[in-house]
Image (cartoon, rainbow, N blue to C red):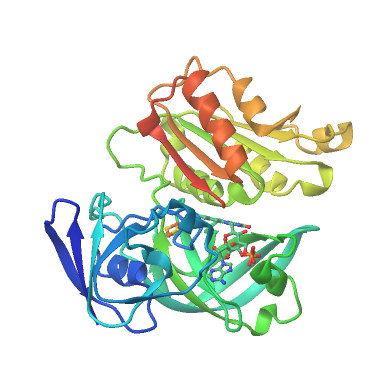
Length: 351
Ligand SMILES: Cc1cc2nc3c(=O)[nH]c(=O)nc-3n(C[C@H](O)[C@H](O)[C@H](O)COP(=O)(O)OP(=O)(O)OC[C@H]3O[C@@H](n4cnc5c(N)ncnc54)[C@H](O)[C@@H]3O)c2cc1C
Ligand code: FES
């Protein structure tokens, strides 16, 4: 089926083919068109568009992103709409077209090669794809498994220019349909449909305006930031730029990746600082002695961020990821306390 994409000024932005079982957003993105989106899974409302002609099937009537739709205006969520024939959709603000360095997403198939528990409710898994994926550090993929309606977003922890191996971390959401399947006995036998890569909270060391890095993550929000740190480390970026990472969890039972942080800090003792904040209970002397490279704070992650002195940081690029309240609190600190310009803050809200 043919989808015609039009701007609010009635300019033609492009035409693309979309299969009868394919979401209009994904079909447009894999054609390289600048469709607006953030979560790509029905929660944020960013992919709001006006159906100008034709019919679509709405896949998820309860999608939280529908709150962004204006009633009676024929608006749809592109990430939850299948075409029922040729149609024409109008978008208000196209995303800037993907640059040469921004990989165009497509579909892959994946199986779990390895998995293990990082904490009582965080799982790490290695997804092996049917062919290599090119992605940027900080990007995410959408995954779908049979019998569970809808795609879910997970950020790559690893970085490689092109790889068949995606390392993901998954938080078990209470009552969460997919995460509970992933924590169950069927994990290793599941076949995943994967769409990606997506996301603009990325680090490309060669991009213009390079600067010092400020990274803030709540819980599994650390996933994409680990990829950014891996990229910054292997490319030599951390030889010339400072970086501070603030990682927040609730309590001792929720801590993970401490060995990875310690290893990174030992590699970049002059430029990297790692701060781990626990909001519910302080970290005892045993953990502090095991990880002398890490600074431990008792408090919320945005408080740990506010306590940082960034006087010697220049041209900051900031990253914030995790639950929306943590990202919003961190963004507020970045803007008001650290005076980071809004266009230098990149974020992924996990909700
Ligand atoms: C950009 C981004 C990156 C993320 N990265 C990570 C990460 O690295 N690690 C991590 O743990 N979490 C990450 N998350 C959060 C993760 O996507 C959610 O925790 C996950 O969707 C929970 O799925 P669930 O099935 O367990 O929960 P559920 O509450 O059952 O489902 C949650 C989501 O699934 C989709 N969904 C649910 N029902 C339907 C339906 N009927 N039809 C269509 N769609 C449906 C919606 O997107 C919904 O928000 C990320 C989120 C975003 C937006
Ligand atoms: S991109 Fe469609 S609701 Fe978020």
